[in-house]
Length: 353
Image 1: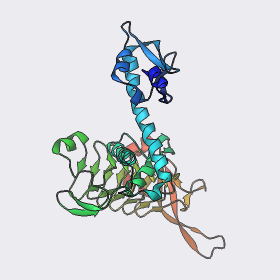
Image 2: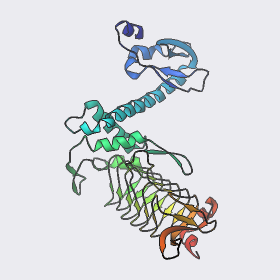
Image 3: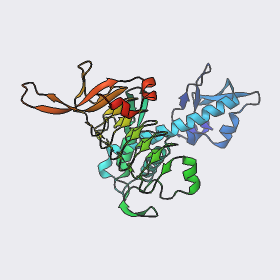
Image 4: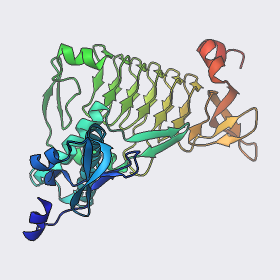
């Protein structure tokens, strides 16, 4: 028990806590101090559970089942926190890390983080609201570390051979795994392990890089590229030849993001961490990076790094101050709300601009 561990001089780390919604938050000791006996003690006969307080188990009025659910939540939270701590520390010493020198716990933490990204349980960026995203820098660090802990090797996806550090996502998948994942991947589609593809998405012959997230109902059309850590929203259509740039460094930079219900026209490029906000339509051949001026012809405003929600955007140009030349820009020709967007085809939105 913990008191015995203390007598033997073993330091007991602080517990993980979670807001249980009851009068008292639930706290558990770290996983390695929760042996079977302690776990059994947590379910009291009178329906109460115990919380870890000042290195001692004390009873709480919380029902045991609610406690067990909270325990599972804490376990997952603790696992993520543990991974993050290991990754953050290892990244500071990344120059010394090679496939032969990497510590076993660091390698496992990196590989587990890649598995979490691959399953969609973890994302490089999490949406807080329209145009608002939180970047999990440590997940990007794990991706960068993954290139340092593995040597190049021959990879085989059943059709082609490759020589790389990162396996393809589907290399070892069975028919049941494809059915459970619930998306289509046609011949020629390549996704790297560490990318996530949600149900009802379609991958035509295309490329999805490590750390990317492709949400439900998205279409990644022929020869489109989803760069490293890019975030593709629900029901997004990436037309043929579209390029969505990858952003691994700088670490604090947001990845390139296409929010829900957007349409990106053929051969357009959205790069450098630019955000296309929800419900926008980008015409074909539009190029948007962080420095691209995005001119709203209705209001005269100029945006950079983001396309406001509901925008219909085409290529254009802006004159220089002295009028001697013009430079490329993107032009917002109109705004549409969600109802109009749902009822109107993309071709109709782009007519008569």
